[in-house]
Amino acid sequence: LRLSVLASGSSGNATYLESGPGTGVLVDAGLSCRRISARLAERGTSLEDVRAVLLTHGHSDHVCGVPSLVRELGIPIYSAPGVGEGLGATVVEAGEELRIGGLSATFFAVPHDSATYGVRLSGGGHTVALATDLGEVSGQTLRWMSGAEAAILEANHEPEWLMRGPYSPRLKRRISSPSGHLSNRQAAEAALSLASRGLKDLVLAHLSEKNNSPARACGTVKSVLRGAGFGGVRVRVALAGHATPWIEVGAPLEAEGYAYHYEGVSGAARLFEAE
Ligand SMILES: [Zn+2]
Ligand SMILES: [Zn+2]
Image 1 (tube, rainbow, N blue to C red):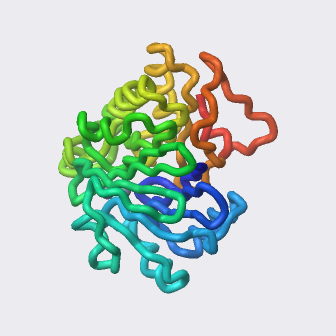
Image 2: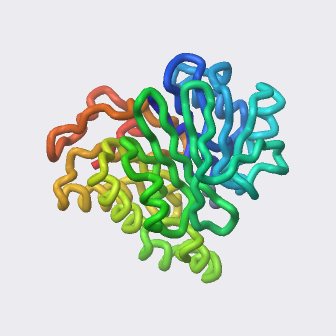
């Protein structure tokens, strides 16, 4: 089982997973078919490999590419109730296991300002959990993500930057509310809990361009993990403009305090593995 976050943030979200040739699944399609295709090409794969699309919620940064994907590929769309009905999605109840080729997927509800779900995906004996638009990480959310070897988790904002930043007071309240978006600190606390339950790879996602930076998000989470003896967990940041490198789910943990080496990679690639 391997994955790449193709794009992340308020300008568009999509994650690609596969557990062998021809088993590809997209979670969210918040960018055009053409752009999704270009990001898949960055990873050496293509739209032909996509068998289904799962939707986390109905915000346009997660679904705006769905109509063109359906037109181009005619592949099935799946969502939990209240998300994708208007887009022709087949509705699957939260907590119910959906089989797509070699993968199984289960939606679980998370608190956000519309009906929103995280997804737990398993294939080839490995498990990934994704939760990218949520105001808080409840015990129930942690239970659904528990045991995942790789997690894609929102780290939206640094609270101080949000408060001092350019948004209206109303928008600031919405983002920091329990049905808004996760802060770096909230992400770090959740990461710590998941690290003690087998997490090896963490991708921080849906970073605000105005109220966060890859270095701040990664630094906050890394230092909390390292302080608790989980310095071997690989922490990366998903960006708006590039697909992440492949993450092979279940790859063994690095030695404690492992630092990444950046030889021969571009500035953008460095950000995925910033210390
Ligand atoms: Zn979003
Ligand atoms: Zn949202």
